[in-house]
Image (cartoon, rainbow, N blue to C red; front, side, top):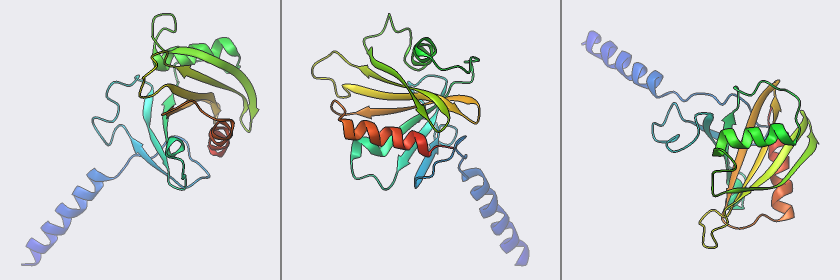
Length: 172
């Protein structure tokens, strides 16, 4: 009987070990839940290879601010942020900027806690688009290039843009 109980306990522990979630490569000072694409097979479907997973910001009342995609841009070797590097990162995430429907707008460089950081907007020109704007922050955390992408149901406000910058500043 003891062998059956031990075998059952071992099986349960092995199932738990398999179901353990992968940690995010970066942490946030905010209360977040991270869903890694390694843990959920369909999570990265139709996303760039650099897609890592989703942050869910549990304390956010605004549903547009609740979820942010995380991209690891390890193939980018340059560590000096400028507009050209930002556009290279956008192309890594969305595809060749001259060949896609989305249009890069409002590309600007600002100084965050990690140094120069790019903020950009990818706008869908289709009037009835479900996601008319994607707001992107690209910068360096732990001396590695990362990007976060917010998918917005309508054009972002100045308050939402500040909220997104604040989330970027929370990442470590």
